[in-house]
Length: 212
Image 1: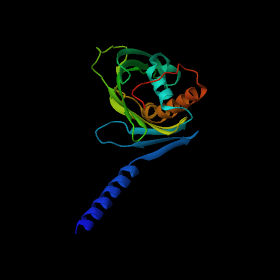
Image 2: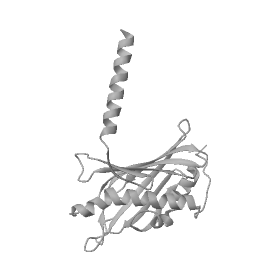
Image 3: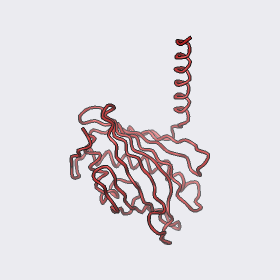
Image 4: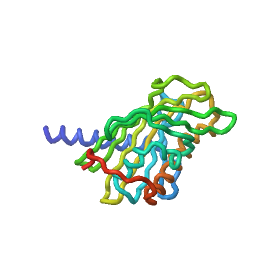
């Protein structure tokens, strides 16, 4: 009887895992980058997930995320970014403005990143929380809402597998082509630029005590 119960639990677990995987729809595949989307009924736009393998280390990845001023050089359509708050190496809050085509207003957002190193899995998790009420609204911009994460798996000393996922509400009334920019162009170009930057080594390399 106990064996049957264990077998049933395993079947249910595998079925749930497969179902969750099937929820994602591949919408773009180019330059070794894959972009997936998934519909979540509570949100206007689909959630996106993008993946890529990069020839670099986990510490170098954190070095780039830790250097807020260079975000416009790799984050798609980011106009500017500046640090608001930092607590050690594992928490940062920053403000950024994303460009939108005329006549639509640029979008601004406040992002909190929490860094967690999972030693057994050799995996870095960066939880992203969008703090839409951290700063007063600026009428020049439309404030975004949402959440997301980075997952960075160490494949070898100088090779990582990166997953970038976000659920973003860009706010306001926007046409479908502009909405697609947030769930298609943005993750693809962000990972394309990030890969180029990390593999070029053109940034300040740092070490972090929480990664071992």
